[in-house]
Length: 525
Image 1 (tube, one colour):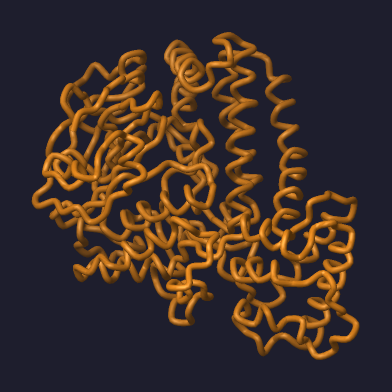
Image 2: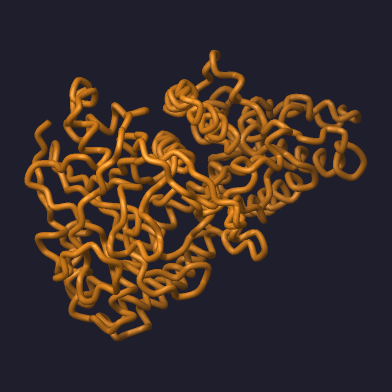
């Protein structure tokens, strides 16, 4: 394999002068040079042909020993100097100080077909930012990250990508739920790919320390490389916040569209490019529940629950604005951008939900229709993905007045987890909403067929439900990687009906309701 390397990050920005790989506070530097830890007996489990093509890697090369060695830490890309990035972050609302790439090592920036990609190994060993951890990752979290990165891309959600998933051959000690029951698990490494892995926390760390010169260098680099339409001056810094705000809002709207819950929206997990980054204790809504979070660490306060993700995004943008302030020294234009976010979110949310409902026009009472639907969905456990997918099958000529027995819900029977609850006030609420919806459809000009095509293009049929990932994890732990392969193929076409994959278009099985890895997840990797 031959890569065209163009390491803009390390060529332009200040490095840590200390070369030893020891845990420490790194000052006035954006990164530390560090090499991956060699692995004992690596085994490639899966790779993305699409991502390999982005990087100019042929299918033949992905089967080579060189590919295996480079992307499991046993060899370096020629002429590369791997590094770990320095950043800080607010975690669960509190400033955590220096964090950094504690278990991620950037191999190089490579160019192919006029696009530049950073290659990053997650789980490749300790760095100066590992604190008390080992810098490694385990198979279960690596499978989840690998599959989800690619699934999100094919859903049309802004995201980092994943090139490869491999076993390291090493055993890694982990306490899955931080309850004192540590055990050895199989170690694994994922190669993540993105234009950049810069986060909000990359800027916060320098502002918090008063290292304004380093902050300015990083912000100028960000503009020059990723927002070249902007200028490296006060006006440009203001516009940078506006651009990042718009991209981040677009990302979170997509999350709400597909029912994705990130689980740990700390500022060190927020991409400066508006990409979904750091797939840890994430999950998809199965029963629609605005207050749901998959993260056990957040179980009490539910800071990062599904329904609050847009507000948390704004909170994080405020922290980014605070980090940029030393370069601007004028709060008013930053406040104007942040105040505008709320209105922009409202408009974009209605636009997105209308698309899910098959409504091309936006009318005055649409928000009330959306609100009432969300309320009704929570009256009894209703699978979000299945419900919206079936909604496109409703004919706008249906007569609700003639239906007194609840037959109108027959197309949705497999979306309800407790169908016996569909009676009395709950059934009446559903009938009222469908009456509102059919009346609203009468104001649209689309035919039923046209509307179905549009709705099926935004309402996925297949998402990476937690229990699906858990089945792949349990099989892989026994040496069976067939479910990883099956899900990787399935999730390339999440909006298409795949007759051979109907078993995956089903609500969460009852056995997964309280099973660790299906309903409860932690940040343990």
